[in-house]
Length: 91
Image (tube, rainbow, N blue to C red; front, side):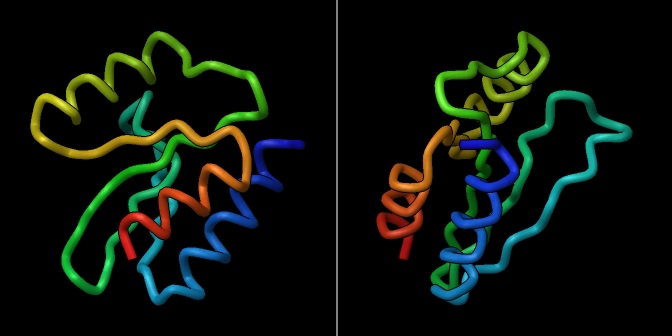
């Protein structure tokens, strides 16, 4: 499945759970994950979407490490089922 289709379905599911979902514009910050999600309970996390089996670039991995060192959750999602599982865990 294409990355944009995985992203579309997972973000639609998150919004159905009343999460705020912000597409990140990486124009000024290469490597920033694709979406920032915020829950009603105040939980904040990022999702990096990838086509099934694809891996983040070295620049993306570097940014993920920087975020995680600051106690920010970052998930790499390459299929809809896993994305929905993450959403359910934060719901």
